[in-house]
Amino acid sequence: MSKKIGELVSEATELAKEKRFLESADAFKEAFAILPADPAALRELASVMVDLGETETGLSLLADSVDPEKPDLETLRRIATLLRGKNRLNEAGDFLICALAQDSENKELLAETLGLLTELGREGELFAEDAPTS
Image (cartoon, rainbow, N blue to C red; front, side):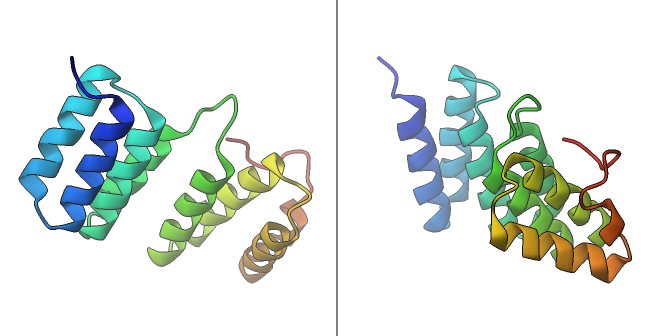
């Protein structure tokens, strides 16, 4: 009987933290063999890739983990943070707008989004009907 996917992802993440990358890759491979597009596994692998300096790969994995019907707020914010770190501010703004659409009552997220959009001269998009969606 094979391990549950959650156990494999946890094992893979711990192995990566211990810098045992080949073993970590094998554990992720086994997890993806069970469920090829598991969002939690994609997010964990993305974190490992970012820790390894592979930010673009991490961004791609995070984007793949987002459910277009019900995007995960924290994943959208993580993508925005990584994009800001890569000085891709307009894209980060788009993801923050999408995140705010998921939780319009979140004052911290509202302030973060408004701050970035103001910096970009896009503050008018904050509540615009034609703002980007996920």
